[in-house]
Structure formats: C-alpha cells, structure tokens
Image (tube, rainbow, N blue to C red):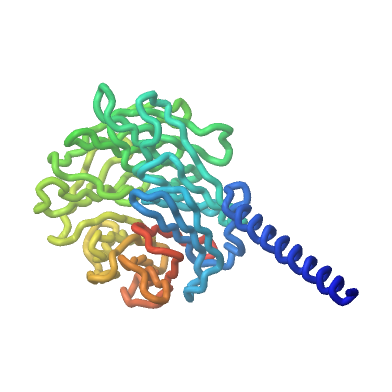
Length: 378
C-alpha cells in the first residue's frame, strides 16, 4: 500500500513538473513574439542584417548573419508586409513597408527591434506605406505615399534626427521617391503624372523654397531611391531610366545644388539600367538592375565594368550594397531548397571585380522579398 502511495506521489510530481515546463516554454515563446521584448541577440558579432517579407500576406523574418553564413539570431513575426526599402546609420537599421505605415527600426548595438507607425497629416489616407526610407547626414527620411487627392498625386515627407523631440512632416505635390539632406537643406525628388521635379526644403522652417522641373522627356524616371546621390559640394547625380517606351538609353543627370538646374546628361550603354549610384573617393560606382556594374571617374569617363549577377532561373537579384572596398549582392531563390537555403550574399572586390566570399542565407519559410544592410562592424 505504501509502495502504491509513493508511486502515486511521484507520478503526480512528474505530471506537475512537465505541466509547469510546458507553461514556461509557452510563456517564453509568447514573450519573444511581442514587440516589447524583441531582440536580435549578439548583433555586434554579425556582418549582415536581412529582412524577409511577402508582397501581400502579412509576416516577416529578421536575421543576423555572420560572413560565413552562421545565423547569429533570427526572429519571425506575424506582422509587416512588403518591406521593400532599407537604410542604416551607425546606430540603427531601418526597414520600410511599401504597403503599410508599419516600419521596423533595429538598434545596431543592442539588437532591439522597435515598430515605427507613422500617422499621416492627410485625412485622405490611412495606411499607404512608404516608397523609400533613407539616411542622410545625421537624419532619417522617408515618405508616406498619400496618393491621389482632389489635386492630384501628393506625398508626405517625414524626417528627424536624434536631437529633435518630434519628427517633422511636410505634404508636397507629387509622389516623393527619394531625398537627401545637405546641411539644413533637404532635396526631394518627386513624380507627378509624366513629370519629375526636384524640391528644395528648408528643414528649419519645414517649408519648400524652390522647385525645378527635371528634363525627363516624359519617359525617364528614377527606379530606386539610391539612384539619387550627392556627387560633390555643387552637384547631385540622378539615375533615370526609360519606364514608358523602354527602348531609350538610360541616363545619369547632373543637377546643380544651388539652382537645381540640370547641367549635364550622361547616356549609358545600351542594356545598362542604373538603379544605384555611389561616390567613393574619385570614382562613381553605378549598378544596373540586371547586375552589371560600371565604375566611372569623377568626370564620368568609364574606367572598368564587371557583373555581380548574370541571370539565373532559380535566383533573382534582390539588393546590392556598396562600401569603400566591396560590393555585396543579395540573390534570392524563388523557393528554398531542402537545406532551407533561400539565397546568398556574394561579395566582390570593387577594384578587380573578382568574387571574394559567399554568405549562404537560410530562412524559416519561403518569402517574396529580401533586403539587407551591412552592420557597422562590417
């Protein structure tokens, strides 16, 4: 009888212990999936931070990878859609949604994830998303795509820095597709109907001061926000592609910072569609949407070219980043393989164009989009 009692007591303790462990594990999972305690741990040991998302279905994944492909940490969320633009500075990495005003900010030192939700000044829009997010100087800038109003297309510029108590908002005519800040002046590129313009905004007064039409022949437009960059103290460079007839050579336009007038047009070779520009010392690096790279001198004489992607039935070129020594291309599989491989980040030497390293990317599921940023320790 005593033996039976002892067996009963031990069984009861075992059941209670298992139950408590299950509750503890369940509670831990629930805690991890709340934005109040979202952390990508040991982010300082990583080289890349990658976001995965879908075009229509809600859900996202954020992962920190070491250069060899080891996953430092990884978080899957039920929210966020179409994270189609990214930017970073020393302190934070940002991923912006093209379909909602819910964006993500990640602390590059602690790995903490914080949701950014912007409320528009416009009464005609609720959740239109952002076309771009950018870091320029010590500012972060992005748009809210208000869309069509009674007076045509409008966009809302949102910008801030660490010293500002509140973010500034400004609604301007046209779709805002990119912006840079120089000193206290913001320069925004806008599209409206078949025209492009550059708008100078005074960040102190939060008011537009000058607006100039860009000679785009009603067919040339900026593909991505990184096609608008500072060339030197007097000049911007703007990459435009024929998005209407799709048979004209692409161009890089040089725009005077003071007058906002286009002072030179450089035609690209046929089949080169620049979407990303970057000035590095005395050179300009231009990346085409098809993976071709051309390096110019500061006067736009071609020096060399190479490819970071040559086309593949299983992969698409998703994103490209550039630092002073290397260019990094993220290629994504349309479907993961049996080892959960969803893509690669491949680095190339900027001087020689030679492939250097491949970082394999594994993910928890298939995704439509992948975007990445280089972490500051990279």
